[in-house]
Image (cartoon, rainbow, N blue to C red; front, side):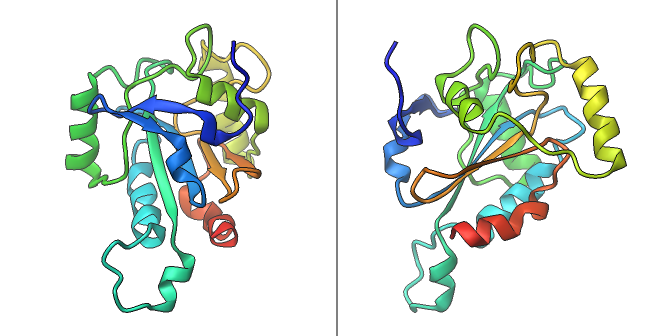
Length: 196
């Protein structure tokens, strides 16, 4: 098995079937999320899209505004059906659901596994680089305890516990932060701004 040394060594398949090489994201801040369409955390799509719209590169930014200095965020959603089968649709159904219900314009990839024998190598790498996540507050800690009980695919230390685990990767790919499903995207906006 070939050892991957950075996030930019990976490839994945988009929901439209096209291969995406992560080397194209060098110099960008990446936000990678395992998503699901029928989860209690699914409304986080709204906040993820808001962050993407606020910080993504503007192709038509012709005026040279200072805003362009804080641009370069790429959000990427990886649907996963490993947690209580909360994303049962096919790839085109999932893409359409995200677009119609949450206005998602960031890339949605082909459905994958994030844990176990068939887990996508990208998530093997992300989990090895950021094996733990923090649950802040009593409600989040109670939810964490509940998710540990419900999660059938999280079998080893570092495994993804549930949908909407988030990985934030710096422009140089060297810093990878992991955020729990209970962490709202707006709660780590400052970390995004620091990386941008």
